[in-house]
Structure formats: C-alpha cells, structure tokens
Length: 284
Length: 284
Image 1 (spheres, one colour):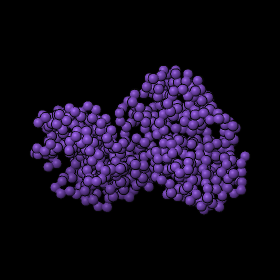
Image 2 (cartoon, rainbow over the protein chains, first blue to last red):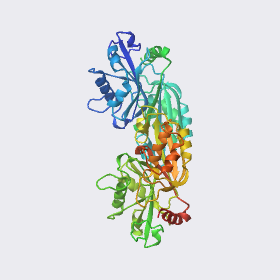
Image 3 (cartoon, rainbow over the protein chains, first blue to last red):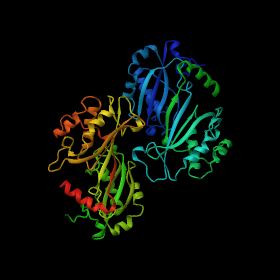
C-alpha cells in the first residue's frame, strides 16, 4: 500500500505519524456543478470543498476521498468524505470547521458536520451501503417550479406496482453489467439491498434504492429501464431478462437531476477498519 | 363601473361585446422576481406573463388581474389570474394556450391551466379564500441546499404547540392592523379561517394558513410574531395582546422566501358573480 498522505489507507492515520483523519458530511444542489470530481477550470463539488480546505488549513494541496462519487447535475443530502491532516493542522482548524467551510463554499454546498473520524474510518471503503432517491412527475404537463431542479418529467402515467414487481427480481447479489458503464478490470457485481417506488404527498413517483455500492450510472440506468416497464413499453418480466443479457441494449439512462444521494451507512466504530479491508478485497 | 377592457367587472364580459375572460392557473419560484406586480425595467411575474400574452395575442397591451399579489421572493403553487380578450383573439389563441405560455415564460414560471373562465368569474373578487404555507428549519445550523430557496433558518428550537395555542386565539373575523402595512382608506379587517403549524417528514416546521384574504405582508408579520412565541421570547398570551394593540410594535416581518401561495378557492360556478359583488361591497 502507498504511504501517500491521501491514500485510502484504511487504518486510522492518527495512530501513525501524527495524522488526523477528518470526516466531513455534506449536502449539495448539483445543478451548477460538473459533478463531484475535480476538473481543471470547471466548477465541481470536490474542487470547491478542497479549495476551502486548502484556504483554512493553509496547505498547498488537499484532496478529499468521497463515499459516493456523483455525476453532473446529481444532488446529495448525505454525502461523506474524509481527508487527512497533521495533528498540528487539526489543532488549529478543528474547532467550528463546519462553520468555516460553509463560510467559504457556495450556498449550494452545505457542510453539516466536520469532525475527527473514528479510528479505522474510510469514507469510501468503510461504507456498508449507499442509499439514493429518484423523483419523477408522471402523466402531467407541468412540474412545481420550486422542484424543477430535482424532479424529472415523464409524459406517460407510471404503474408503480409493475415497476416494483419487476425490480424485486433484481434484489440480491448479481452482475449488473447491463446497467453499468464498462470499465476495464472493474467488477460489475454488486449487492442490491432494496429498492421501492412509492407516491409521496405531492403525487410524485419516488424511488428509494440501496446497495452496498453502485457502479457508474447504475441507478440512472436502472431508473431508465424501470420507466419502460412503468409506462407499458415493456412487460414486467422484461427487466430481469434484460439484466441477464449483461448488455446495455436500448435502455436510456434517466436524467441526472432526479437523483439524490441520500445516505451512506457505516458499521459500528469497532468494525470500520475490518469493513474497509473487506471492501478492498472484494473490489480487487 | 369602468368600461375598460381590463376592469374588474364581475359579470362575465363574454356576455357583453364579444369578450372572453380567460382563467390562468400558474406556479412560480419567486427567487428571481421583484414580486408579482409589474415594475418598469425589472423582472416581475406579471411582467413576464403579460409579455407572453401580448406576444401570443398580438395585442399592444395586456394586463392580468391576480388573485393573490405576492412580494419579492415569495413563491406560488396555486396562483390564479384572469384576463379579457375579444372572441376573435380567443378563437385564435385558445387551443393549447397553456403550452404556448410555458414556451415563452422562464422555467421559473409554470402555467398549469389556461381556459375560458366560468361566467361571472373574477380571479380576485370571486375568491372565497387564500391558503399560504411557510417553512422554517429550526434549531440547526444547516438547511438542505435543495430547499434553500423556500426554507427559512431559525437558530432556536420552536415549540409548535405553543405557537398553535397562541395563534388559535386569532381565528375568526377581526382587525389585523397589528399585522398589516398601513394603507389609506383600506380596511384591515379580515376573516382568518384557520392556521396550524406541524412538522413535515423532513422535520421542518410548516405553517398552513387560510383567510378570506390577507392584507399586505400579513402572513409574514404573523409568522414573525409567532416565531417570538415559538422560541420563548414571548409568552403564549402575548400574541393576542399584541393583536389587540392594532400597532406593529417591534415584530419583525419574517423573510419572504419561506412563503408559498398554495391555493385560491372559489365558490361553485353559479355563485361566482354574487361572490364578486359581495367581496367588492365588503372591501369598499
């Protein structure tokens, strides 16, 4: 493993060389970002957060490790990241770090918490699961303008029972290649823990979906496929058949702005390091 | 009464001189507007809507009459307006008028309906009641960034039971001068039909409030006063005492962006004209 200060070393760096790992919880409106990941000259969530951290810590370069990388236009309410700093820096910036970060980032990023992480914590590898939501306004020609940045319009009415029935067949450990963008040497096997569509109080169709982890564009590809079942373009049984092909086929990835990263879950503090090791072993 | 094409004549103009009254239902995100009312050189909801109507009808000047005038930053989900045009113009622009308006207005205005009004309909004077909501995030240092345009932060925790108890004393017909901006010769007597605070699923404090009509800034002044009871700066009994002074005192008007005009209610079609006449008589 690398000795790099910002490696994904699972053991707590605080026990080694006087480093402190900081856990930062944040939410953002993804509308005006090119996505999570830093891109030169473009406004990204990571770019904005890292720049604020550099200003506060007076370090030349800070690089956060994120639990759930999000695409352009995708939002988050429960994003988690970690970053390592020296004890000396931590002593200086620790108090009220959340407030300091909020003072420096745009109003579309909100840091709800910035604290010393539990030993063994790794934002990405210690995570047990990721939960996302997706919102669709179906069968109407208008959307509440106050929700236009987080709700996707769908012309035809959706049969949520049909969508739930089709989707229930995908729950469990399986190869989600039919819903993943291909990447060399990356596994597309994931454990889909649960997914369920319901109507909220505003009659929106809302998906809640949880997995140990998602590959790139997986939720939006699943939504695109489920919409085809919901509006009757495909039969209920087609979704499982499609998944078994392990090929993308003609499924359109649903638009990004309906998607919100809601929550990352972690094991109890005592299991954080073991979970990180287990995740690394599984992905390798 | 005036013979002006755009007067608030309660009888349906369709029965007189070949005019057609159009009812338009719309929603808007008030963030980027100076408010409902047209102001030269500034972006207003009415200005945007009237300009779209002028373009579609090819009339030199169109002026809509609104049910609930909103201030800068205040939103609407259930706003209603009317506008009168000649039968010839109506025949030309009537079909799919809602779609045409949405194509011309910004994405922060959404027309959900644009149809020939029932005889006797007047958006302002036929209304039986107006319902508003107001949203507050209390006792926390952060707000969901996706809701930042419609939720107001309040540092201290709010006791909604105390607020509801205090507010219940104001329900009914009374003089709301303590919550109204003074205007010469305008009555400040209104019938407050109901108001209630509750916690929504996101733990926000949400007020639903309905009256026959509200005077200028009345909801926001009521919210400002109720917040003083909710966080303990004032006793429960103070709200009624304050109302009875009929003077504004030191109550701060709550910020506009927490406020949403949710719904305008009208009587059954047969009673629209009589309701308009009765409202005019009461306000005069």
